[in-house]
Length: 83
Image (cartoon, rainbow, N blue to C red; front, side):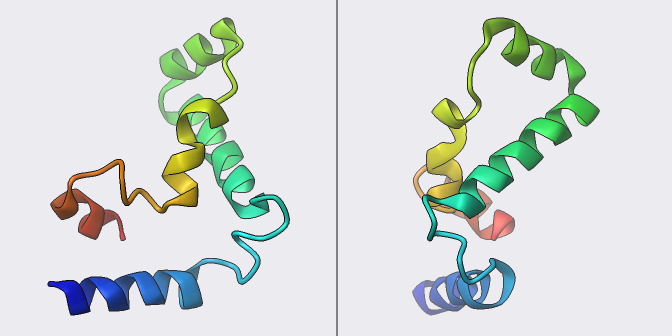
């Protein structure tokens, strides 16, 4: 429900993410994108290799994922699971 979703988001912002996550030119988002790229290299080397071969900056695809905490990218049920 809405109240539960609010408190989940509040907990993410206040207790999980660093206080400067959305400050300093989205430094936190950029760090998370680099972590994602490293995880892709480790867990899905084929996908990582394709990204590197295409010379595609990952932030083209993922910047909105992290800056909006997946709100617009995932169905609600999945979003709640990620949160």
